[in-house]
Length: 255
Image 1 (cartoon, rainbow, N blue to C red):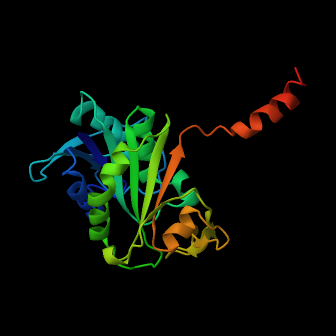
Image 2: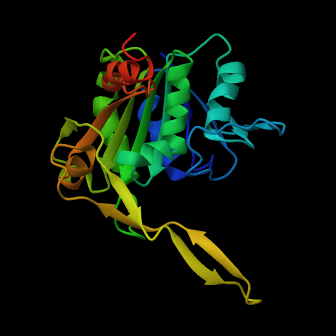
Image 3: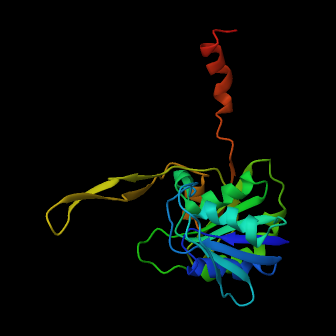
């Protein structure tokens, strides 16, 4: 199996090392990752700046860093790391959860999506930690993937569908198992914080307080909070198919 690995935390991120360690027993791994952290870039790509690609020494593994975004790394990887094509794009392991609406912001998820758009299986993996400053148990992610990645690589998926996996950030022995779960709602309050710089000029810092709704049983948010790994199939087709007929009747006047 030909495996392309990337992330949005950068080439030096410990989660990337953990993912490589988990994946290398399933096939030949090649790494193409951003040269620095690129979190919250979503499915963006670089259009008006050159992409610089630099080889990286990685213990016998073909690896490169790119001065671009995760989507750029997938496209570069398919061009120079796997010019004859690969079987899967693995993205992660992200230092933090990608649950609910976070998938629209996440560079980790964006890379898996780009693989899917290019007709390659995409899997995004994140460590779901909700405590600021808590250490990440990437070994938990490695162990869980070593036991379960084979299933994720073989499970049948509809066209234009990829997998978003969130692993609770706890010791491996504390995991209660895994559940397939739909996306929940993970939203933020007070998204913009007003501040003054040292010269008294105002600016805004974007972030906000995470809000995990407690009334979402069965969703990825609830699943992870109960210490189960959540596995969510995500479709690149964003069409609201249930609304098509109603909208057609209104716009077309019943024609």
